[in-house]
Length: 326
Image (cartoon, rainbow, N blue to C red):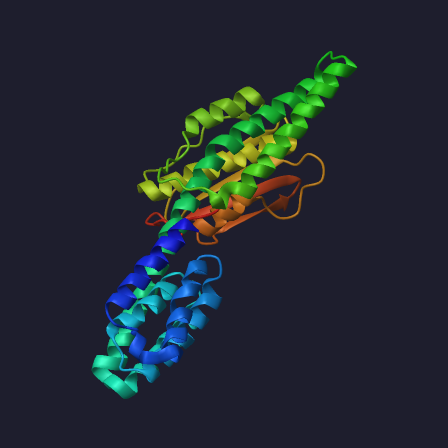
């Protein structure tokens, strides 16, 4: 709220110093000026409502008095904070129409529409950049914390099943397992709130070695062909994801087979026997991989096995907004 207050105060100072409102304009203009400025305090919390109020007050002020360019400043700030494209377009056209009678088509409407459009585009670019950072952080978190926690849970479940434990020891393990599963849930819930510029692909050899220690049976590591860096990173994330899922859902001793078909596209297929009843649909990690792979990912039961396959064009690049993986 403090930042909103400082921003609004700065806009008000420019607004009044430029003569956008003076005492000679009367109380109606004073009221319109107040509606232009005061709602900006809540621009982040209620951007749509603030834009509507500020736009209507700005249009009224432009029609009431001889327009000054600084009269646009409050509506520009409201546009910057508003994600809705249609609402921004309506506000821009309203301001452009209101200034037309006094300043004409070029100095009035075209100028107003142009600066309003630029303000909204700047805000949209900032929101896109923040979303990209959140997605990159989500992928990094999934490739580290979620996978490591899954291995810990598998080890604890194995100890509970085969270990010579007292009832008290089993209760402690149950508490540990519940806490671990809760931690995975919390990870998934907090991914979109994270901010992190760093983006690193998982160390695939390290991930597979850790999973083998936890009980995954993998005859050989997959041999990936030479690929551009973005494609190779996505291929490595796919292998790590299906390996973690196979161990998590089937327990130690599960055998995973990975087949890689070089070409364009590169096709990677993972198969493992199904233990119990498979869950319908895919996890958050698979959903993110499918989004980043352009939808060229399939998964499901087939002849007693769980089969996951992805096709990656050899020249693929990252999606504009990344993927959500956890």
